[in-house]
Amino acid sequence: MGSKQRIRICHLGKYYPPAPGGIETHVQVLARAQAALGADVHVVCVNHLNNQGREVTWSRRGATQTITEVDQGVQVTRLGRSAHAAKIDFVPDVSLLYRMLRRDSFDIIHLHTPNPTMLLIVAALRPWIPIVITHHSDVVKQRVLYKAFQPFEQLVYNSAARVISNSPTYIAGSSRLLHVANKVETVPMGLKLEPFLNPSPRALAAAAALRAEHGSPLWLAVGRCVYYKGFDTALRALKDVPGKLLLVGQGPYKENLVQAAQKLGVANRLVWSPYVEADDLVGAYHAATAFWFPSNARSEAFGLVQVEAMASGCPVINTAIPDSGVPWVSENEATGLTVPVDNPQAFAAAARRLLENPGLHGRLTSTGRARAIEKFGDAAMAERTIELYDDVFRRRATRSDAKVVRVRSLPKPTPMSTNSESVIDTPAKAKGSGKKLRESYPTEELEVRVAIG
Figure 1: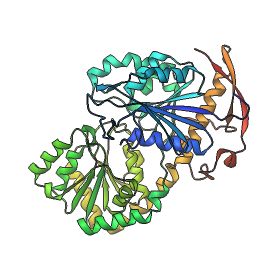
Figure 2: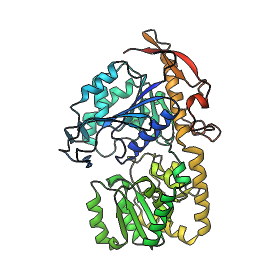
Figure 3: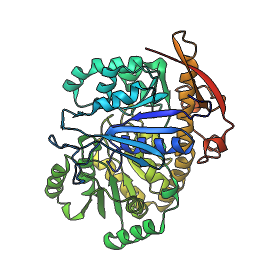
Figure 4: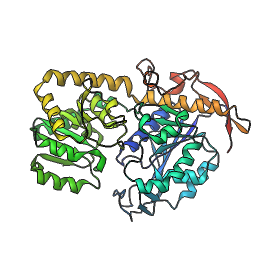
């Protein structure tokens, strides 16, 4: 690399927005923020849209084509697939990714898991480029499939230079993370908060329209209709509270939820919405009385939508999932209310408490915004992650079987640990967020020895 070249990052994701999902949103936010800091960022994922632009994520025969595009400075390659089965996309064009990883195009590979398709590809290719993994959650439900998949996962995790957990509370309950505990660092997920903190005129108009149409209270839930989201708990809780529930999402469990709402007698108070435009989603958060997040399994490791709600001033009601980051993101009695898992009576009681105590509602609104700003900004997350990459390069420089390259480096990275006090970004640390890397930091050239094999 020339002395002026930027660090070159390849993120391996599942899908990419407009595909819905927490991993998908996180990859986009992180990639954009790293590009804004001056990095050369490429995302490789599977294309979830067919030639007619229809989502075929869950369709076994949903074939797609390979396309490339640019998203706010991020190069995105969406690999076509021929079929989908057992959580795996079959990608005929895998040779394209092989050529990309073998021709010295990148300095670091950042794999986001659970992601069977990309993990199997990495296990097969065994790239010499250093690998960082963000472990978004454990595999919780698909135990039989996971046993067959586990040796490949272990191979890739053992070869990784670092493994990122999104919260300090998730690590203790994860056998996979404990197996590589000496490599684990905590970097909380972040968001571009401005649209939620200061909504656009269109978002405010959307909020006003929702309030006019549905009245108050209006409860909000957002997410894919899958088992661990716990939306059945939300429907049972709706029986015991006034108002309507706006559920923004779709997925394989939607029909089950429609039938459950009819049996419970709340179908007339359940408002379904498919995934909406960004301003409409911001408007929903600002129109809602509270955000319901009733997830019930460690598959829900963080809950980035909680940050969206907090930044919007919408108090969160979440669940006490053991060894999950969910109740850490929005803390009980501090930024929201936390209730036991799968307990619709407790969920309804928390909702009524917000209605009956305006002072509590106002306090949680204020403290939720403050925590979102302090802990979960996108620029601080991107800076922290690039510092982690730099630490990987420095440590690999001591290897004797190495190849010398030059990358741009953030100077003097701070040591990292999994202690909550030392891993959370602060406003002071994020000062100057959003500026180009060359504007925010005096950069230095770092000679790095990247080990082969």
